Length: 274
Ligand code: URA
Image (cartoon, rainbow, N blue to C red):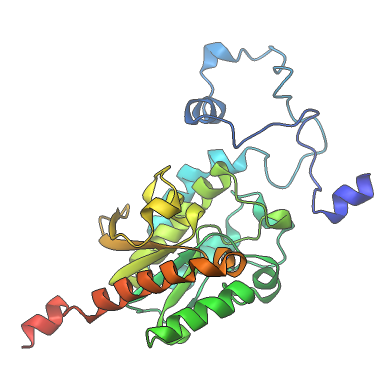
């Protein structure tokens, strides 16, 4: 059993009972991050359902994802270039996903792109290559872009988390929170005209909404970054979903037309040069 866990990438002992972080409310998460002194006396034993860590010290604290979100915000805001941001992320110990991933998947494409795609999380192919959207989903994304005359190299592509979650599970809210400041800074440094949010976890993270992707897709929404940049965001269906449900490609087609129309609008600079 232990060998099986190890192969699955589980190498750190956290507790004796499973804990459903997806079910954890924001209030519980914030109590866990900063417990009130009186609610956690120094000598009190840890509650049975949330056992304290007693195994050998892990290189990353089990609660690092949650407690490091503030750290991440601090650090990411200081990056002045994409190179600096990448280095910071490579050294960032606040997200446990890095322990099981093979590579950091920072992002690729034009550094001054007009369009920036933000996906969910790297999959197996991306983890091996260290590049976003290179597997089957990525190939479909490239074909989607080609239908509106955009080359993949002309856009910027990244994800809400830069490490592959084990077994391609969805990132937990705490993992997403810990990494999000880097993604938002990535957007600020590229300063695209528009952001395309790919798939439901990307939309949920970027726009802090619980609304489903099927309701949000194809509508222009607004993102304000921590640095005050305001950008239009277009949620679209994830190519992985379209590969499973090819009949939904007609919706993706419509959304791509919406993107094309937006990009055809004159920019402020165009208007000033008229
Ligand atoms: N799916 C994503 O959301 N991102 C990738 O990089 C690859 C697949």
